[in-house]
Amino acid sequence: MNDITVNDLSFRYADSDQLILRDVNIRVNEGDFVCLLGQSGCGKSTFLRLMAGLEAPSSGSICVDGQPIDGTSLERSVVFQDYGLFPWMSAGENIVLALRQRFPEKSKAECRDIARRALREVGLKDEVFGKYPKSLSGGMKQRCAIARSFSMNPRILLMDEPFGALDAVTRARLQDMVLDLWSHEERKKTVFFVTHDVEEALLLATRIVVFGQSPSQVIFQKEIPLERKPSRKEMYESRFIMDLRNELVGYTLRTRAGRPFRIAS
Image (cartoon, rainbow, N blue to C red; front, side):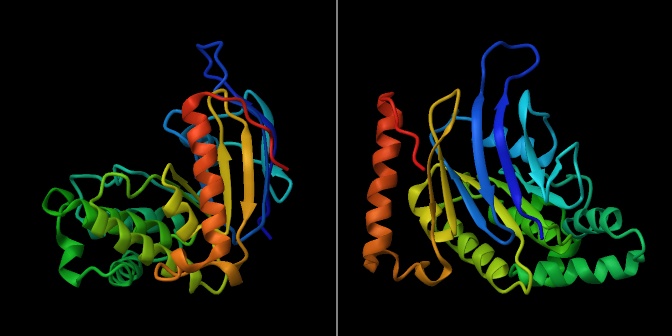
């Protein structure tokens, strides 16, 4: 099991007195797809950096199966909005490099085979393996980044607004692709997905966590059971989803207005 517990987590940067996160408490089950929702600047990406082990809490803890996160780990993979591909390496070699680190017992030839298969699984042709990032569209580069993370088979996948810079059509295609990859895994990864888009959160998530204004606390959490998760076509036909959408939009509007919140249980 890889259950995750966040206990009274607070964070400020070492050179600042200003809290970014304050007393954050979350419990996530293994295999959850968690969307972190909130306005820009509310601390969602900072929380993801703490999850990745790139920052350390000022107080409180993040524990995986009772063990505090202490530094980075290959069991946790990150997909950033800017793709994170090395420009001097081909798309395929970017994936091979990550695989060699994750699976040192595998040969380079084995890692190349895994990388080619991963690229196919995200809808890219074999010739993309040898192309450099500068020759790829934004959508193709993000597919490569997602292929890299899924091929490493981490238990926890952290995605920081990965589709935020893409056009609407490409964004929708990649949302469906990630959901399809995740839903067909025999042992589902636990995903933390940062977004400020309510519709994106409703489409992807099995659990939605809303952050308030900085210093952020969790102001609302809601589980969406798998049997009630809608497809893209069904989303606007579900009364449960539409009621939840209206509730989430209400929280978002109140955040913009700077109004106080109740802490939802």
